[in-house]
Amino acid sequence: MAVHNADIAAVFEQIADLLEIQGENPFRIRAYRNAARQMEAMGVPAADMVAKGEDLTELPGIGDDLAAKIEEIVATGTCKALEKLKQQVPATVAELLKLPGLGPKRVKTLYKELKIETTDDLAKALKGGKVRKLEGFGPKTEEAVAQALAAHAGEAQRFKLAVAAQYAEPLRDYLAKVGGVQHAVIAGSYRRAKETVGDLDLLVTARTAPVVMDKFVAYDEVARILAKGETRSTVVLKCGLQVDLRVVENVSFGAALHYFTGSKAHNIEIRRLGQKKGLKINEYGVFKGEKRVDGKTEESVFKSVGLPFIPPELRENRGEIEVAKAKKLPKLVEPKDLKGDLHTHTKATDGHHTLEEMAQAAKDHGFEYLAITEHSRRLTVAHGLDPARLRKQCDEIDELNSKLKGIQLLKGIEVDILEDGALDLPDDVLSELDLVVGAVHSKFNLPRAKQTKRILKAMDHKHFSILAHPSGRLLDTREPYDVDMLTIVRHARERGCFLELNAHPERLDLLDIHCQLARDEGVLVAISSDAHGIADFDNLRYGVGQARRGWLEAKDVLNSRSLKLLQPLLRRTIKT
Image (cartoon, rainbow, N blue to C red; front, side, top):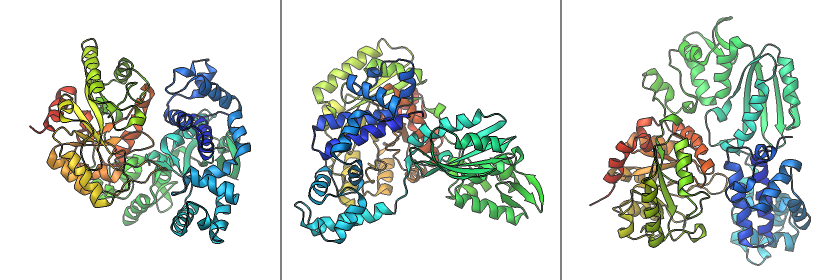
């Protein structure tokens, strides 16, 4: 069975969880978490590197020990270190860490004092009133844990888009190579570039459907076969991802692709338009009575109801049909529109490559500029820069720019926004930079009014350029902080500064609805990678997908501008 980067990441996360429950060295735990993050976001399969005999220690944050563990996981699917930890603490205990309000110390207490190993055990203990009696808990904590447990029970498992891609794309490629297959496409929420995916919808056209179905259920990553038929089958992969496959005739491909891409609300509206014209639209085609009149392509489906082609990312029934009727659909931004990246890190803080290596990687991506924006001094865990170290890096950038050809580095900083809205570095050093990216990295639970005021005050700073990852959310880990985004967007417009869409797969922040809000208010959005290594530039495709869901065109994106056009915009944010 192929081992994907996400599988390796899952092993490292589980090791980190179990070490944390045991109260092990925080630096050791962080090393595993960083390695998991590196694996999950990396575009190149680590298994391919192992097969080619490449040096894994060249990967960011991967030393000899972790490299050996990666090779072991690729070979066996697990590693001895994890199995040893499981003998000391059951792996199910780590699942309790996913519940808000239960940190490692409390989980350890539950396990040691009440022998709680699963969410079912926890539910029984809560019902029996045992949890409140433990040191460090009490009635209020017990109530909060009970609410979190109830919410968790109702949640279906979802996979981050970049993780789903590691399973979906190889499976699609596998099916595309089956004899007689003409099309093999991933549809559903994946094609609509949703931030997370609940299951996968695969669509295939082929001359002989039974052959495709046999190959599908025989795929070496299939754990369970839920259903197998002549034209549709459903399996669950070993990673837990459910995959539904449909095989249709070539003449129905467009109609089926539209139907299985969704969303459901969008499809209902298209069918209603069809009914008004005396048409029946389903996954098999567009029918006038019993006669199929369209449906071979998606374009023909839309044309049958008098509409132009609507990009998949817009199909959420959020006004796209009305705009299409008026022939005013946006020409959505594409990866090739990006001329540079405005948020990256190097070895100077918590990045993994040098200035020169990052510049070369950016040039290889076709960029003409790259902003270096290290963390500021308050973020000690990332070795943030103080004024002296920042000035030293600026000198290094100036020296490197004198030698570089085809790309220019911009001097910047990702400066912490403090609780009172002040910035973490003094004006005299910020004034020497090309751009200042402000970010909230602490006090996420401030009340809505206070959090909003904090950010507005930071944006009022005379050197502020871009608000980084504006909602602060981490997918599956941290909810967005409570903030008045409309007020922030309008303040950015008045102030003349910009908002970031952070393309890292754990963030994808701005949210799509806030991208659309920024567009409507005339605020430019920077699609940035937040790269900590050269491979992270590949994640920009997810940022572009999120931007497309937010209706953004190239003209709405700050870094779609050439360097010549960008520099005046950045200078304009500086108050004199």
